[in-house]
Amino acid sequence: MKHINIFLLSVFVAFASCSFTTKTFDDPDKDKLLMQLVTYLLEEGHFQPKDFNDSFSEDVYNRFLKTIDPYKQYFYKSDVKEFETFKTLLDDQIKNYDLSFFNLVHNRLTQRIEESKAVYTDVLGRPFNYDLDEVYQSDAENLEYVSSKKEMSNRWRKQLKFSTLTDYHDMLSDADNDNKSNAEIDEEARKSTLKSLEEVSVYFDDMRRDDWLAMYINAISESFDPHTYYFAPQFKDRFDAEMSGKYEGIGARLQKKMDKISITELISGGSAWRQNKLQVGDVILKVRQEDEDEAVSIVGMRLDDAVKLIKGPKGTNVILTLKRVDGTIEDLSIPRDEIELEETYAKSSICSQRCSQHVRSRSDERVPEDDPA
Image (cartoon, rainbow, N blue to C red; front, side, top):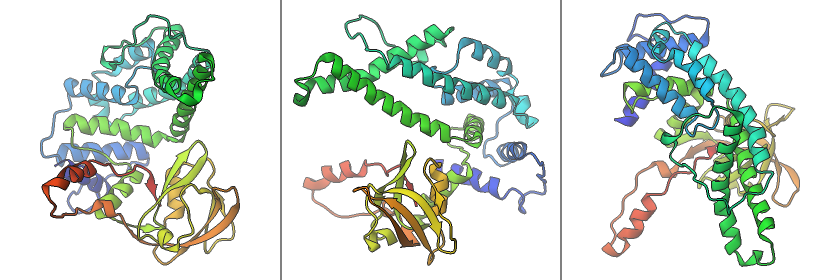
């Protein structure tokens, strides 16, 4: 049922102007138009529609804030107090396609995320005192929003100390570090934590307003039931590929770390795999279409946008400027083809009881989350 509801809401939004309804949707404001479509479909197309009332409004409010700030490390009490004026008004805003609440929260979140960079950089720039007897609350449900910058810094300090402690402990246990002092090991562990946060920061920087709006719309749709979900266009394309098991491209999985987009896997049977020239670890610097003279730099580009440049119709070629693992730079022309995602298809086999445990353990593996191109 979950996949059916996801599919229906995505497809209905795409084809809302078709023959199943005579209602027209022509608001020039694309955000309001999207809200019109989603609201109409939830009210008229959902198998068990709910009333837009104060109870529904509070559920949307709580669900959205929990989604965007689950560990209460961005918003202050003063922010939430301002947000709470909308807590029982969202049902009216939704019916009127009003995004005032979303706009307020989104702008404040963007501001707080930017402020957090200075906070965690400062915290990780100083040694942790592991001899200090203190309590870290890991259950976000039991946390209150902080009231001041000092409290916010202390919350980040405890969270980062807890995160860094694992690396610190592992490094202390590593025989290669026997000649290092505890202070040196602590510094390396803090640098590792900072690097991870900087990678998350790049992900946040890549997020557009549309991505956050999709989260708000999902807070609305999931308040109807937990299996109804809105897919933004780029996620709908990925969902279609995963459901059909096919797409047109070169057959490589890409991953972005900091500003670099690299190859993490070649999909078996794909054109890049058959060509046997692209390698895992290669960094893509530029992308050029075969009918164009100029290549487009993808350094620092959002991953979804880079994937769109690399994918294309079967039978065409794409030219990638690569930085190889050995540091050399070269252009590589790769033919596009229909790529089959082998992990999408169910497989069966008969095996003895002896191998059944191995089969169960393999079935629990998750499909990589890197984007296929």
